[in-house]
Length: 165
Image (cartoon, rainbow, N blue to C red):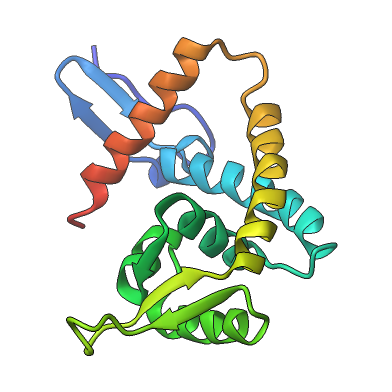
């Protein structure tokens, strides 16, 4: 017996077959939509807290990444904080002027520039990271640790799946 989509806009829906399972694609129930919906709202709320430190969300991501991994090239940092290199370069320039990060050329390879936190940047990252942890704690409230571990594993898996797109 064929399954038909329900709703006034049947002609707008397409069915995808996965063996015996038929799934109707609905934008507001899709993984990309839900990931973005949660991420944007969490980012907006966290940005309000960051504003009192005169820091933007992308600046926080740079600080937190470098606090966790010490030194990165602009390309590595761009991949990790999801900011285009040209935009990140301007952002890092601003952060250099505010003495939050420094740019250094390694003696063994003058073609690259490594971005590193300054002591002031480390101090700010150390102050902001517990606030970020509180936002994460609020976001995952009601989930048990095993669910959180599985959720993070699934997100990493999705990230690997889409890396080649």
